Length: 345
Image (cartoon, rainbow, N blue to C red):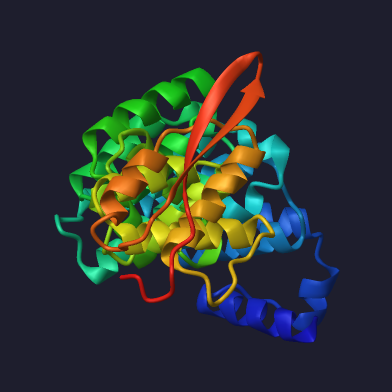
């Protein structure tokens, strides 16, 4: 407390206002703050001091705070204003003051006024901070989030743009905007930007949502080739496993003779399902085990014949079995890979 008094007295001295520790301690704080504001609100240093004292002594007079925010904007004290807005977000009565919304909008849009494409590291940091502010902003209903997303698009920061759309409060509008956005952007760019800019800190939760949307877009469009052989393929495998869509990916990989990748996907899936593969099992048996897993789950699929045709040239002895099950009074014929001899490649 003594240290705070000393700091305040130093600021008062710079402003040529005589105070001692005793007189400062005994002064009614709200009256002192309003007096300081009345006589010195034309000085940036005094405005900052009034702000600090108002927060310290919980003086939340709406008229005073409306003036404070106006002056912080006028003096272009954007960095400081950003911190102040986050702090007073917990003071609900201050949300109603006229300058509150304008102040939030100004600090969020400030980086875009001078940023170029591609943004410099410093500009990129400022754009990141703007997105963090958006996450904390209590008045999203009053902001043009689509317009802010377009600002990020102009800087080719697509992941942040999608993050803005995720913040749209109305579910139908949010869904519509996200669907349209995903049609116009390369999901690989989204994944790369998530890794580059959004994996840590306060935006990490939104990074996961953006990654999921990008992977969903790739899976829905069957654009797996965009990720095969890239550092993002493990993300795709895990995504398909988590969302019970392994058969789709396995079909695609086998159909295009990406058998090593298919076996990798199947192995991870079976391990995830509590049916790990034995270390000495052949590739053909791995796929057969996957067929049995699908069989037991009663999920009809037709990629076994494709497996056979693609593996025939690589494994010499593949025996064909036909299994039938009755499901909802229909006969489903399952063609499964038979056992192979070790070293049959």
